[in-house]
Image 1 (cartoon, helix red, strand yellow):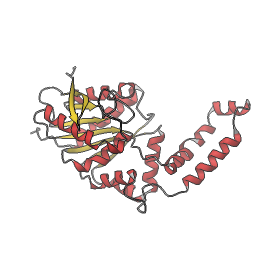
Image 2 (cartoon, helix red, strand yellow):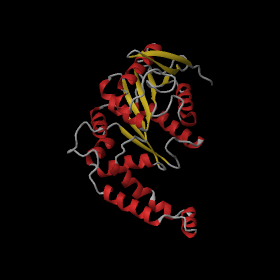
Image 3 (cartoon, one colour):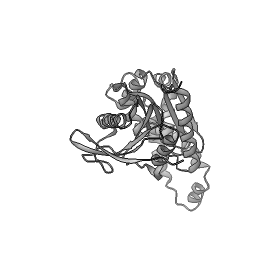
Image 4 (tube, one colour):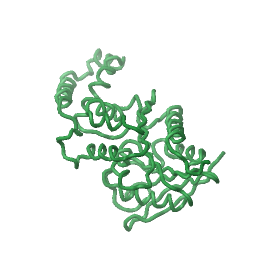
Length: 289
C-alpha cells in the first residue's frame, strides 16, 4: 500500500518553513508523528531514513510531518543550535494539527540532538502525547572520554588493522598515549548533569524536561554508536538520570548491530518496528472503540 504525501509551507517568526506531510489513509489514528531532524541535517535524513520511516508510520495509520528548521534545507532564515529550535517545533506542531482534521495530539520522533531538542520542548506543549528518542545527544568532554575508554580503546586492540599499523611503524605511540592519559583524567571529572551544575546546562534541562513529562517515552539505543554509549554511560553514572529514564511510562529498546543512523536496511526496519510496537502499546487511540 502506497501513501499520499505532499509539500507544505508554513510561517515561523517571519520566515517560511518547508515540510513534507504524510497524511496517512482514511480513518487514520488521532495521534500524529512529528519527525524533528537533528542537525546539521535536512528533512530527508541520512540515507533517506526519515523518508522511509515516515512512509511506514503513515502506512500504519499515523499522519506524519517531517520538516526543515529555519536555516536548513529549503526553509528560510538563519541556522540555529538545537537548543534554540523550540519555536520551529511549535510551528510544525501547529501545521500538522491544522492540516489533519481531528488530530488530537502528536508524538515527536527525534534522533541525536533532535531527541535532545524534543526533551527541551516537550513540557511546553500539551499537544505532545509522547516522545520517541533515538540516541540522545548529551555530549560533554567527560561523557565523551568515558565512552571512548569503555567502548573504543578495548575494541581497537582487537582489530587487525591496528596491529598492522604497529608492525609497520605507522602507529603514533606517544600521541596516542598522551590522548589516552588526557581522556582518563577528563573521565574522572564529574558529569555534566549533576545537581551542582547550573540548570542552564542543556543536559540538565533535558533531564528536567523528562522528569516533568508525564506521558510515554521510548528510548532507542544503538549498540554500535558512541553517542548512544555516552547517553547510557550518563544514565549509569548519574542517579537522577537513571531514575528519570527508568520511571513509569519509560521504555528502552536496545538495537543490536545498529549504528547511529540505523544505516543498514535491517537496522532501520528494526528501529521502525520498535517505534510502531511502542505506539500501539503505549498510546490509547481515542478513535478506537
